[in-house]
Length: 226
Figure 1 (cartoon, rainbow, N blue to C red):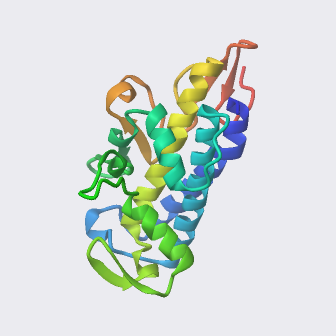
Figure 2 (cartoon, one colour):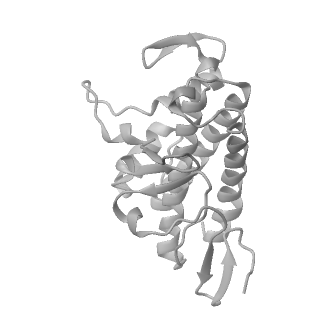
């Protein structure tokens, strides 16, 4: 994996999904009072995001450990946490609202429950249930209803933030290897905060990097600028 592959195979797809989610904010304001609002649009976005998370997480694991053979999120979790030790504690700051606030979409990966088990985020369970048991009635976080009704603003937001965080960590690792100069790729919805991320400039739109192999300036889309 190199920066060009990352941009074309992963980042462009993320930006497309982010734009689709942003379109829904024209009708449902990004506010905690609207977290329970569900729609078919959120079902579609959740399924897209969940699929991308599965693909990206596996790619990250293969990047760090060439012999990795895992096939699901329970296999990805220990590898990611081993190589990205601050991952579960990193905050995703949400922009485009009156007062920016932060969430930790992967926080539960840093917690061991009373049975000694590390669980996956609730939004990941929602993704799987919407994918496989959409019309079944079930319980998530002490709420019982048909699973498709969990495809709401809250879980869609958290899942998209989770994908964004995965991608930025991946890009950061590639930057260390390929000598990509920060800033990192731009998002209009999110930035990361806490730890090393507080010292990095995040752009809300197109960002640029210098390719030290040829000395030229490129946009995040990989297009030559100068």
